[in-house]
Image (cartoon, rainbow, N blue to C red):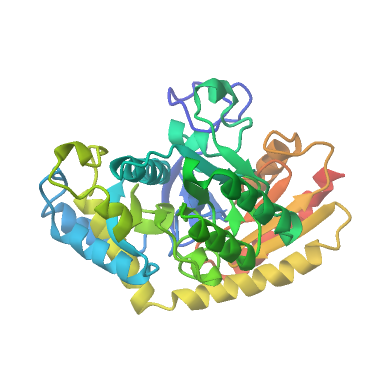
Length: 420
C-alpha cells in the first residue's frame, strides 16, 4: 500500500496504522471516504465546540470570504477583528482590556510570555524568570515548550529551552504543597520573576490532571501579593469545557494575561488571542519606537478567522449551549460512577465536559504501551478517542446526543478488558 507523503503530528509513522481519510463531518460525527461514521468524542483535539459544520459559522465564513480574506494587520484593521475584540473582552475577566491576535494556542502562549518579560524590560526593571507547574503543557514552540513539563514531548530540545521554576501539581486536590512552593519562591526573590503561567483547573496533555478552584484562587492571591503577573492558559479549558465559559471564573480569578485558541472559532479555523491587562499594554505604549511589542505572524487578525470567532460567540448568545454542557456533564458523572467500580480502573475524574478514566497499567505516562492498543480498539468500534497513555478521556462537542455519548462509554467499558 502506498502511503501519503504527509508527515502527521504526534505520529510515529514507523508503527502507526494508515491514516483514516475523512470526507465530511456533521454534528459529533466524522464521515470517511468510504461512508463509515465515527463519533468524534474528543472534539478533534479539543477544538470543536458546537459541532462540525455548524451552519451559522459556515455562513459567516462564506460571507466574509466574499468581502475580505486577509490584510496586513500592522497599521490596518477591519470590522470582524474589532467586533471580536470587543465581544471577547466583554466576556473575559474585567482585568483584561486589550486583545492581541495570533494563529494558535502555542503562539498565544509565546505572546503572553514575551509580553510579560518585555513589559518588565520596558519598565526598566528586567525580570526573566517564569514559574510553571509540573505536568503542564503549553504548546510546541520553544517558549511554550520551555514553560511546559520536561519529558518525552521536549526531551530532544531540552538543552535549548530556557530555565523555568516549576512548582508541584496539587495531587488529589491537596494544594498546600503547591502553594507553599510558590510562596517560597516568591518570598525569597520575587524580583526575579516576570510571571507565573498555569492551565486553570485541568492540565490537558499532562494527563487530564485536575485540581479545585480554591487552589487556583490562592495561587492568584500569592502572585498578586508579590507583584508577579499571572498568565492563564485557557487554550483548552476556555469556551465551556470546564462548565463555565472560562475556567478561571470558577475561582473568581482575574489574570493579567489570558491565552485562548481551540474553541475560539468553534474549531473551524486556526486562531489564537492573548488578552492583556491595561498595565501590561501601557508598558509598551510610548513615543519610543524601541518599546514596541515586536511580535507578529503573517496571518495575525485574519478576517475570515475573526468572522468565524464572532459567529461562535453569537451562538453562545442565541442557542442553548450551556444546556448541552450541563447534559454532557451529568452523563459523564453517571458513567464515571459505574466505571470507577471496575477492577481495571485506578481512578476517575471530571471537570465540566471533561471526563478522564485512569487505568491500572504496568507503565504510565504518554508512552504507556496500553495507549496505542486502546486507540486502535476505539477506532475499530467507530469511536474517536485518543488516550493519553493509560488515561482515557472524553471531551465531546456540546451537540453530542445522549445516545452518542452512551455509545462512547459502552465502547470504553468493552475496552477495559485490554487492561487485564
